Amino acid sequence: MEQSSRLKSSIQSIRKSNMTNIGLVLILLIVIASVFSPYFLDSYNLQSLVRDLAFIGIIALAQGCLLIIGEIDLSVGKIASLCGVIGGMLMVTGSVNPYLAIILCLILGSVLGALNGAIVTGLNLNSIVVTIGMTGVYGGINLVLTKGKAITNIPGEIHFLGQGSVAGIPMPFIIMLLVLGLVLFLTRLTQFGRYMYAIGNSPEAAKILGIKVKTIRTLVFVLVGFLSALAGMLMLARLGTAQPSIGETWALNSIAASVIGGIALTGGVGNLFGALLGAAIITVISNMIVLFGVSPYWQSAVSGIIVVLAISFHSISTMIQSRKERKKKVSG
Image 1: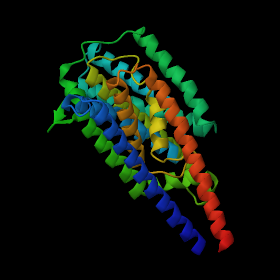
Image 2 (image 1 turned 180 degrees about the horizontal axis):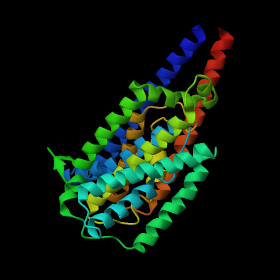
Image 3 (image 1 turned 180 degrees about the vertical axis):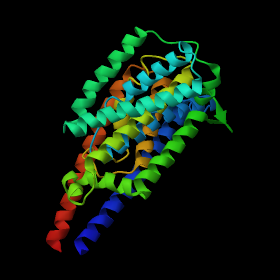
């Protein structure tokens, strides 16, 4: 009992220090960007930055939920894109009420997430392999429907969701904060959230405790599909067109944000607020790339480097901490 309580307290202290370090890195990046670019603190740039953060943030929160249970979804961007395209077709070609179309697409996203989850849990397959395949399926359907062309003339009444603001705060950012509140409540204050962490730590132990592991895992995939569709619909409202290329980098960025934020790829460890801080770091770096005149094509490469560095740092810090724990046990 004494050892387990010590372990819990050490884990909590590590999490707090990680969150502090992530916050300090974000502040440092903001200071560097402010010093080297006079446009960084410009109100227009800050509005654009916060609006960009909303989309990466929503997807990062979704991906973070999956990482907590030890899974990954690489199809989040394609789900967002497909839902955005179908939403645009319903509004423009089908003359469906825009808000009804949004609701239908959120349901569609949930169904696609459920499909991913059912394949992974039902056939006991690796989620990375499954979602790589489903990325091709959703992307292919997208191209069949659009022939690679954007759908224009999206009704102006929904533009407010992507382009509008309330008291100077962009609407997508407000919606992202609502999503943050939802997932934090779900993971920290409900039994469902405790089950998620238990499954991430040890699916076998969770089964022994009577937790319906397959059901919980599938439901998390459903949540990810819903949030992916939400991000896709918000991007539709922001652009005023349904672009087949929406969300191309969202899968990589969401994984990078979650890992930077301290969520372990092995599952069972992490705070979703950290994933949002990670998303903020990626957004600021992307903004710096633009302001410093670097080619935007480097953004994907930078995201990949960040993922590798974050995973390496997490692995090294874990090894160091485990060595410290072993030394304490030997000395104790």
